[in-house]
Image (cartoon, rainbow, N blue to C red; front, side):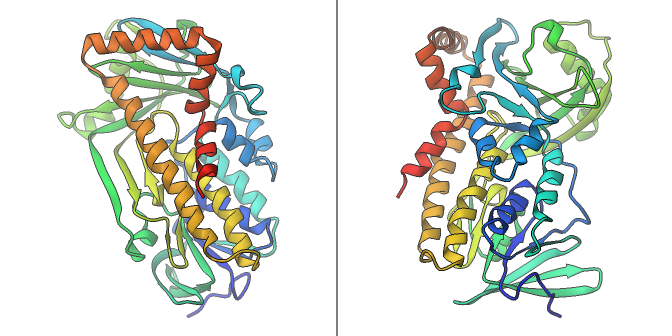
Length: 408
């Protein structure tokens, strides 16, 4: 059967995560009818992404989304580069960007707190709808439309649209249905995430810290919780010699904390959450195939070091929403969508992939002279306001936006 949509000619968005909902919101506020398909019965609890960079907050402000995020999120002015053996190497002050952005800080807010904000904003538009419990199966397209097939409890349904956006994650059925290759590789080690209410601030840790260690690096992020001291979330690599069961046992988390802070091995801590997952570095070989477009993890995935993944997905959504709305309303030719492809894929390849891989290699570097040379380079950079600002323009993703805009 055919589903009745908000319009006979909507844009279909597959995936009601932050990127999918933002794609829909960007279109809806530009008077484009939109229908979102989501497999799950509601928004999901995803505890991975949670760092928002300055240009991302700027992009989320037009609908008041950034203001809503700031009500709960933690403003992070300082972040640290540390080493397990040598201690604090550099502390970066994002206030150096105060003349470059109205948001000279990182905002820590887990993405499951963002999706309800976006969903509430989207519901304000009568020409937008979200169909939960609609599992995308496949698509066909012609010169005039896209036809999506979805599975529901009542059986399969078909939804017609003028365009379709795949924002359905790294395994993206949309990308597979459109026969778009996903080139890259999978890291040999898994990553684990551990959350604890143990407070690391009295030990000298900033709300965001990256700790290099040739044996097992670690990244710290303080997230909002029911109250202080917040929820300290740690990301660290795990070799395949350790089973998932061992990784997810409290003893693993206790050992990781004791090792990084130099506490006795028998010390225990309140552990709120543990998970383990595989990490990939991949980019789709195109972000547009006719009337099908990709955004977020369906288009590119990377390791989390630097906080580039969800941020770049949000940048995709804003870039695409503007261009697709102009095409939809007849204000530009469909060739404008190829510019989206060029701009965002260029940044995914040159910026997100390269920097996230570089960050990982720096944290796990085993050669001591190389490590020491890098520490000295960071110390010199953070001590020089000009060099420090240049470093922060890159790490905050401000430069990535400029790079995308330069692509014609």
